[in-house]
Length: 592
Image 1: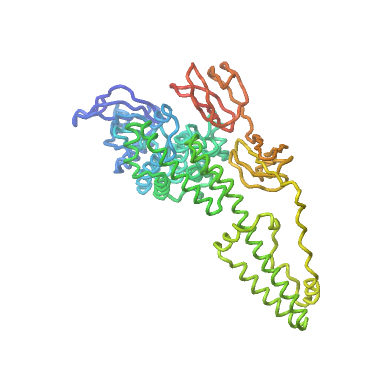
Image 2: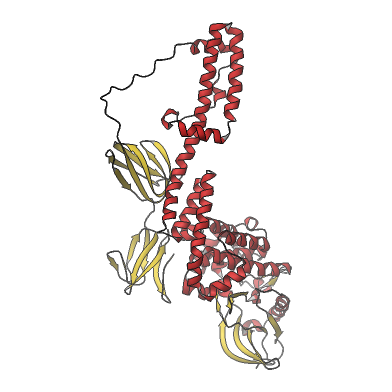
């Protein structure tokens, strides 16, 4: 017995206390009772702090914060304790360990509700300091509750526990300032929430290893971005998580309320409504929920990618299509857009070259007018007037509406356009040298090239299909042909061609291959830019036709991989960093 509470079985243990199931004899209800460790209970200043912080947290009234009912003990033989709401559910950590990573939109809904709770706590000057999946409870009905404010501190005071030399928080989710022993702030909670979302979205901790190694990695800021860890995370949520986990607190979202709004906005783009309602439906039947939502998410991604292509933002379009491809690898619409992303790059370049060609034609017309002026009047005066007319014509050419340029581009062959465009106005000579210019302009125009003889053989064309395991820029015979996302087709003349696939700015990330193309035929070249990563097998498995025993180490290509374990075929994501292939609770994963 502790006061009016009858203790039941032990439910768990944290960094400062043990949690028991208990029964309140007066109110006749079951509660969770957190009892401070004996060695801490002997320190009067810690007991005082424990009670004061618990009372402050008890004043928090929020739908996503676990209720604190009572505080007691610390006098006589009773140890200090906190009485909390008892939830018959499970933790987010248990969810992700059993079911694997969440859809990015689902993770964002979780993050939005937790950020709502943190905003309420921060408004009361309370910092949690230990945000992590095991401190988030999933109650019946899918309700999320942020628990364990037992290590929280009032933001207006320093922590006595910290002054004893003990770091409060869990290393894998700890902010750099906490890892270095500095005082935790509201921005520290935002960092830890980012680390939590990282695990929910990728299925992996942001950092792994011994506590000392993890804290060293946190301090160095050597984070593998979420989208690199798992392509289906997508660039938008990945970027937001990276911002939340910025080493410098000033670079993180301004506050929890702002963060909650950003997470809601991201989920809404995928067709999600209010997070509370979406999570209630998700936790009721996760598999059915994901199956129902994924097509709408993919459709929204395709619309976003199309818009990015139209805005000439090809890297953005490629990143969006990459996520769509990870979510729906066999969707014909996704495959078609993969092709269009690359084709869109080439079309954009054509439009720019056509615009340059329009300016060149205006310049040529102006030069002809100058020549005529020299022949029909005074070179000194008439030529100056003609140059002024050319200047005006150039201004008009530069301001031609895009629809006019697009119309012209449809009628003009790409081969008629010079690749290296120059600034027309810079190409004009100074006005005191117009006589020399006129002299050049009145030279007779070369005769048109004679037509080919009737028996000349027509030029044959073929196609090259270029396949790569990640994005790159493609050059064929030293001519840039645009961005590639895994696969694209290029039209070429028949003959021998040299294909270069390269990621600009990344040293060594390129390959070159020579291919022979016959007229009317399609040739294929394939390469790889993803470096093999070392995988240690902690379970016997088979990949393709190769079998591996426990303890084997092999270098494999990162990405989506089918693995057979115990006769069961499973798909896993091999990250781009060394990892251990292991199985826990029926779930297979490769953990860095």
